[in-house]
Length: 241
Image 1: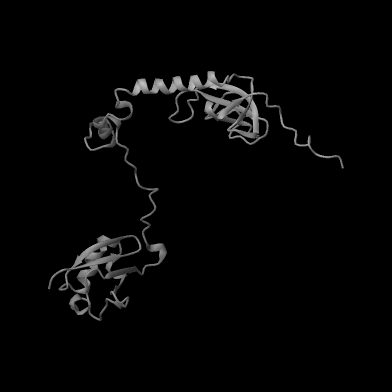
Image 2 (image 1 turned 60 degrees about the vertical axis):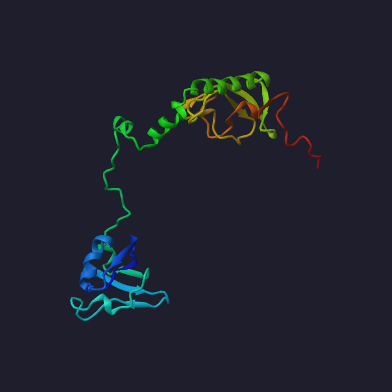
């Protein structure tokens, strides 16, 4: 009889396998051990057919009973249950004890089928011959934005057009702690503690002293509007009671 493709399903794996009907149940269990990680003596196998009927694959003498005695059908599901107690099972999802391999940079650079090799071939990122000029253009654009908006340390401002996010410009320049960023950032100390930091980022302090209150935020120049933005007084418009 021809081999039958079945879906072998266990707790730790699912894969398509070709099953030979002339195998005995014992042979099947031996072949399933390297696939499922379950010893033959601890396997409980059932066959789920297209009609969703679950048929146990078992017999009094599994050495002689062949799989041809069961209704094997193409792409039926062969479920393999591990009958061992939880304490006896191997945890294949625990990788804490697995030694991790890190490829040396010089070896990675020699590979021809890596992302790095693809970037080199396509002249992307730092391999783009125009990259330096493009980077300078971005830096110049941010500097122009700073000048045209009149952004200077000490000036009052608001952030993102939000009238409730008023504050004072405390820093203008690069912030190397922000990954992948180039060009000028504007550090603003907000009047209210609704910022992302206290004036420091990535261990570098740009203004002020350490505080549990987060008044600080770093934004690009286009989000800063300099002007006469006094500190809001929430009680100013309240009527006397």
